[in-house]
Each structure stands twice: as structure tokens, then as C-alpha cells.
Amino acid sequence: MNFTGKIVENKFVPFDEYSYLNHLSTLEGEKVEVEVKKFRNSRSLEQNRYYWQIVAKISEHTGYTKDETHALLGSKFLKDHVDIQEGEEMKRYTVVKSSSSLKTDEMAQYIEEAKQWAAQELQLFIPD
Image 1 (cartoon, rainbow, N blue to C red):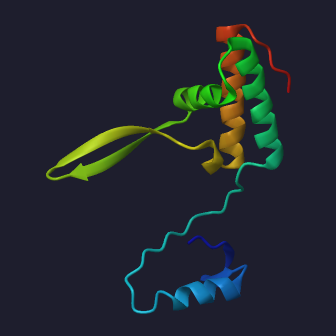
Image 2 (image 1 turned 90 degrees about the vertical axis):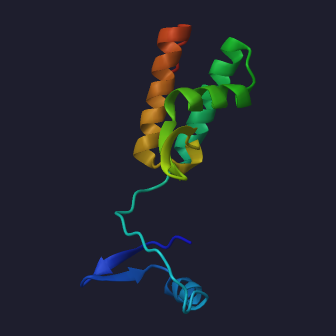
């Protein structure tokens, strides 16, 4: 479960204190992991709408479905690597991140990469 808040006098103050404390009570006595990082906004609804317009234009141009085009763009520009311990050996796997997990700056970069690829490889100009 993720909670957002702010740091005040070196203490975490959740924006939704009731939900935060309620969740903590369900973990009483359990071993937990806590990650603290600077908050970044998730992709905006406007970015998402614009992205799907780009997908539609590429889809129309290539004849692929929107889902196929979305998967293609993800496989080109959203690759990531994860390392997994398997027995005594550490193995690296390539995965494709979900576009819904992107933050606003990452989504903006993804959109620009998709537009640039469409222009260079497909000779398809997509306006801002």
C-alpha cells in the first residue's frame, strides 16, 4: 500500500492520516518494508489522451490494431531490466514497463520518442 504525505520535522505526515493509521493497524506485529522517495506526479489524463491519439494515428498508418501498436511502442521504448536471484546465480531479464506506471516526465519522454520514431521510420508527422 502506498501513501503520500510530507516530511515535517523529520517525521512522515500522511495526507490521509485515517487510512494510513488504519492500514498500519492491520500490520501490527508484522515485519514490514518502508520506502521513502520524493513524490512525482503520475501521468496526466491529458497525456494519456494524447498518447492514445498518437497510437490511433500510427495504427491507421500501419494497419496494426491500437493494442498491437501500443504493445509495439512499449517494446521499443519502455524496456527495463530486472535482476532475479535464481539459486546461486543472478539472472537479468528484460521486461516492458506499463505506460500506466509512468510519471509525468517519463510519459512526456515516451510520447516524444514515439512521435520521433513515427516521423523517422514511418514518415508520419504527429502534431503537438
